[in-house]
Length: 240
Length: 393
Image (tube, rainbow over all chains, first blue to last red; front, side):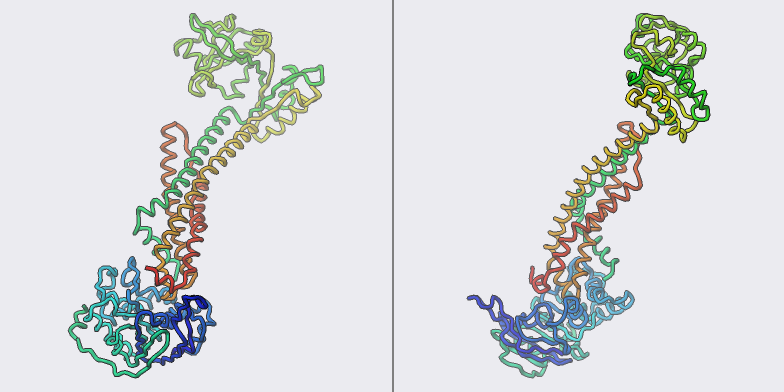
């Protein structure tokens, strides 16, 4: 459960070039939701996601994860939160190129202090879940964009977070692969994961159950949505 | 994240950029190799010196007479001899020495210049001189002021070309002397070495020149452990005679060896200090490259932080990487240093003594340098704010 209470993020406050990236955001996302935060470039949606993901700190306002006020947490606590509670999926995949698929997925487990046998099991499970079990020993540059994004989803899954944050996860992918990734996110949501999807694309947002629109750092609408179902089973089957 | 993962990560990053890793290590390699070579050479040198001193006899005590002091008295050969007869438990033998510098030794048309030593029949035993041909001086030679001599291998080569010499007569400063023996080679038979020597009875030598008087004595102690007691006895006797400590000097071979060792010790400290500067430069090189590496990997650090890496995880990763780099450099340096030392040894005919402690020290210093100079870059990496690191392209 995530809650933001009048959160502001202001760059260069008081100066001429003051930028209000977030201008008093109040937001509550419950467990098990699939929320899309939609906005144009510069609307503040990425700042919003960075604050939700504990990668950035708000200028003012309060932010709670599972009723814990984040502003009170130490750096180590924040690291633990990012490790155990949050899972990130980035537009540029953000895989470490010199590590194999297995080692990339293992990273959050290493930082989480998971014992080796348990790590093995979780890596296999996560890669099976995204349909890339046989690519375990490949390196990121040997994979297609869609495959790389699925590795990054597996990496986010491996640490079994409550909340998955996807920042333009389809931004670097063609439309067919994008659909596969969105379907995968829908499935993960059905399996009980809370998903927050950041996008500039209204069509992609329609895959979520709830659509929040942001403009100039303010929420301008917050609506329930009937999630779009794409049935492209062939594409899922061959994994491309 | 465990130590094991950091190491495999560090080795991986060393392997992926071999050329850079090698160049980074180069400073450490050169520094460590220099330390190993220098320590090995100095170690070899000092063990050679020790062997040489021991060859001269570690029981040796030398008394040099320098003047008359405040007394009119002086010690006679008989006085010194009586010491040996009075303390047979301390002294095994003594010999007076009369040194005559630059005498001409002539045989037929050949002439050499050498220093002559007037000694008695015990001198050979005291100073570990072996006779290769003929015999050493006898009691009769000394007492009867016989005009006989022994020659070193240098004179033998120069005057007799290594041929028959025993029974021949040479002229020392114009006086005829019968050659009764040839000394065994101690050094390399070159001019000025310990093979460039002529020995005669000290009684005869005294009458060879106006300045030829007994200027020193050598004693040998019964045992190396008795040297200090012997020195006490000698000093007491000499002080009684001269009433001043300025007129004589008593030195033991052991003492000289100690001084020699002190000297080589200081020398090696200075040289190792110079090599240490190279290690310092190597450490700065590592710091430089690690800083570059941190800058290059800001994004990776951001990713790791977003996945839950704590400050200390990032710190550990970079510290272990720099320590591994410099330890690898250390190992390469040690191996090439040993190889180089043996190469030098073979080239200059020097003996080599690589010391285990130097190797261990060089290794731990190189690891320490890695940690020390890796700290700044590692700290820089650990302090990065995740979102700023992730924004970096």
